[in-house]
Length: 273
Image (cartoon, rainbow, N blue to C red):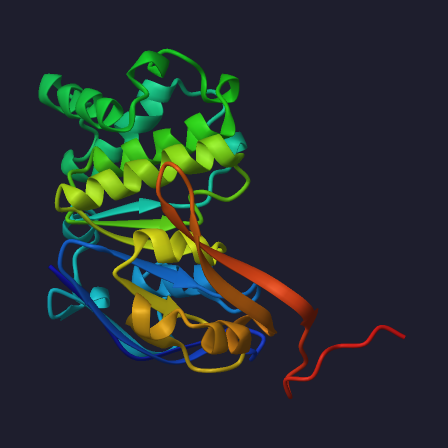
């Protein structure tokens, strides 16, 4: 399994450039986090990688073949995509029906899920701990439970790679922890995952590698120890950053904290008039 981007760039229809010089290769059974400030193009990058909004320059390759050259059905049998949760899209569905949508890439035209498909739906729900929600409407569950259902939907296709867009956003501490533990457990079992996140500490905790996406500059890709430094994060997020290990009774936790004042493009603190 290998996902590669070479000289990727994206320009919006209005002519605004949002991404340039994107280069990375992701292979193996691990987690890679995409991290950067609002407006840097992280979601656009995920959509470009998946061919949903292809790069305007450069190329994304899956297993050595340009994503644009894959037949959609064959491609989506290998990729599990978890977009940002939007409850309104699923309000009238039960959680079981929502997860079963993940089997569509494995079904023929106009086919309905069979016994084997429903068994895989049940297995995916069990994997993320939501079997008890199978008959509940999507409008009746919490945000964290809905996010887990979307992960289960992606797992139901039996993918080689899981791609998640801010799966822990808009969740409380407990639900964030549940989602992160599910992703970590799946990676330990051999499923590769690319995770778009707003939380640097989550990237430190989960990732083997990180793709940092600054605003208006080429992304920086590398191993966590090499890329997640105070100086690099300060430059990317345009605010002072401190990284510290916090020793707790349960375990040692790495904290990433914004300190001081926001910086302008020249690195000077922004003053309020």
